[in-house]
Amino acid sequence: MAEEQAAAQDQQGQQQFNLQRIYTKDVSFESPSTPNIFRTQYQPSVNVDLNTKSSTVDEEGNHEVVLTLTVTAKMEEDTAFLVEVQQAGIFNVQGIEGESLRQVLATVAPNILFPYARENIDALVVKGGFPALMLAPVNFDALYRQAVAQQQAAQQDPSAVN
Image (tube, rainbow, N blue to C red; front, side, top):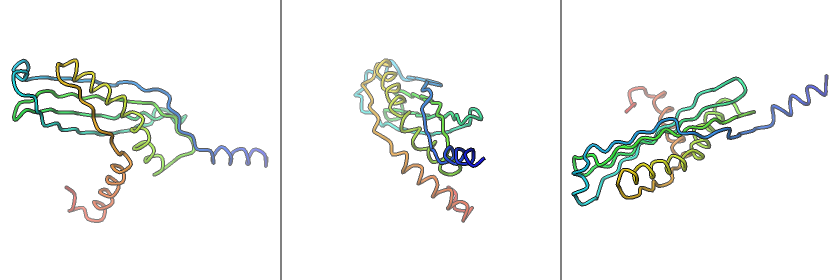
């Protein structure tokens, strides 16, 4: 009995985070202003939106994390292109629960997924006839801290929500 309890404590004390699979969940590329957009000097304003979400896959600790990147390039009022990639992964997490689990799924997993999403976006943009687009790295830890701070502020003062 004592050996079983010791083994159970050892298992609880071990934290594991393992990548099971990376895959592209959804891809969209639109270039509504072609071919006329190619006749202008290409100096776009580029907007990047990102979002992450996670869900439990099963009772064995597998979680799906989906990183969604949406990039919009505009030339004045015309949209040169709009590309959206949902890069996903299955991650097995053991021995991490609660707020720590939320933090790992919101920071570590997207850090792993981001290079794949960035590569997909660049390939789509180039195949769409535009110059290569290399997205800058993202600090998911800082974004997570900012989201937590905003959530805490909203709980303290519900009228302060943007």
